[in-house]
Image 1 (cartoon, rainbow over the protein chains, first blue to last red):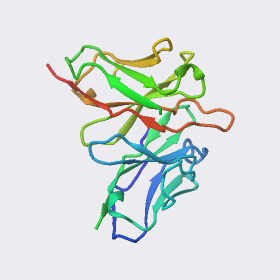
Image 2: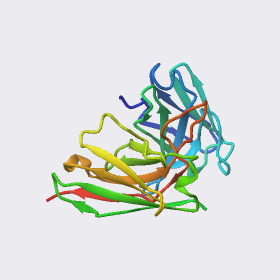
Image 3: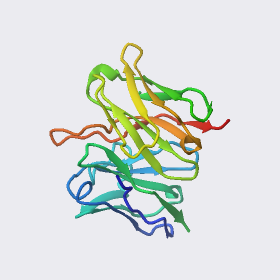
Image 4: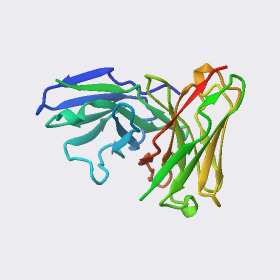
Length: 110
Length: 125
């Protein structure tokens, strides 16, 4: 199984909005709503930010939102804050009953 | 409060078996609601799903893994374990255990919502 495709890096200024894309295939993102997004700060474990394409776990800021169109999912962070600077990973269930992650995107808050 | 903690050797010799255990507290693995998973992260790289196990012993593995892998569960100790055989330097990584992932059915899936802190395993002679 191939990793989902994410941009290596994105950046934005405080207060701005950014969007991170995650492109898969018709064997994963294209056919399932089971797309998740994880935030990882250096030296820390990943943290679930979005599940089932556009649902937020309790305690996650509503500045984080998700969407999906065709084989591509997206994570949008609005009102960027310094604490949002981290690596972000998407993940999807696949037709083989396995899971695949994206390569990760480094978000820099300028 | 759900907590997961990985334990095991931090150094493994090439061709030997990497063995890690995840101890779960705050929830019973036997509840049958969740799958339990292993994820690894090579130094400076992204996340890689290794596999998932249900309390009954049903497992799903990443077919892309080069080293033979097995995941087992001990419900009496509320633990699940990972074994990676014939390891090479390419298996050097931080290994995380987490709750969720696994098989999705009936339109329901559980994401990886609780994670252990991770443990670095180095494969070197």
